[in-house]
Image (cartoon, rainbow, N blue to C red; front, side, top):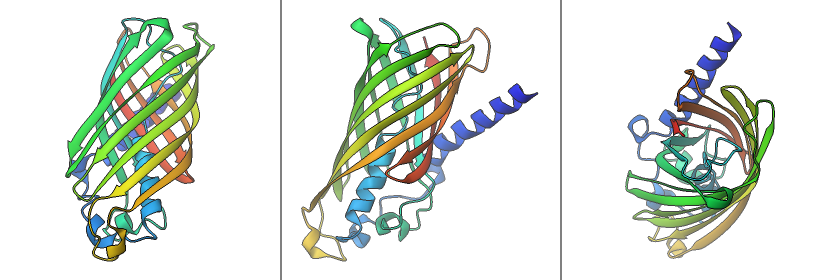
Length: 251
């Protein structure tokens, strides 16, 4: 009974993270940038943007192994924009998030590579990264460890951004469930490409922010002898709470 309830909670959490990030369920998150951007809101906006870009870059501490693959849908969301992010808050955005498609491949020497991206609401996001297996184990009740690096670029009519992230991940295997944790940092660079209505001095303004990232979640194979998985996690990024999740096929 407890196992069935746990799976339902995980599935709900994973779907919430993905669909809360889906453009079908939210307004144009970035449509108010030109009207609302000012000197005080740029850094909070950059922190929130970087928090989303760095979400769901991992869901396991084990590398895929040479010729392994993982294809799925990911999503990251913040429960609310941070207090100083008037660009999102004053635009009526209560839960900010993004979905994307991600494809991963196992490379030689314990390295995984992946790409991800999406284009919607006038935003085009492209990214990817590498992960290296520090210590790997396929045995039940054992730990595995990864080091991971990611990078993203964002293009919008009114702004552009770049993101880099570094994380160290550990996971603990329990039959068809894997518990994982990660700790790292994000760097986000935001470039204003328009003349904001509220502050004409912000044209071509550039801000760079750093933030910490902590992740704790689980990945589950809900059906025996299957490659389909779902994952969900709680995140704390630069002091702001959120969720990430996804589903896919891993081999």
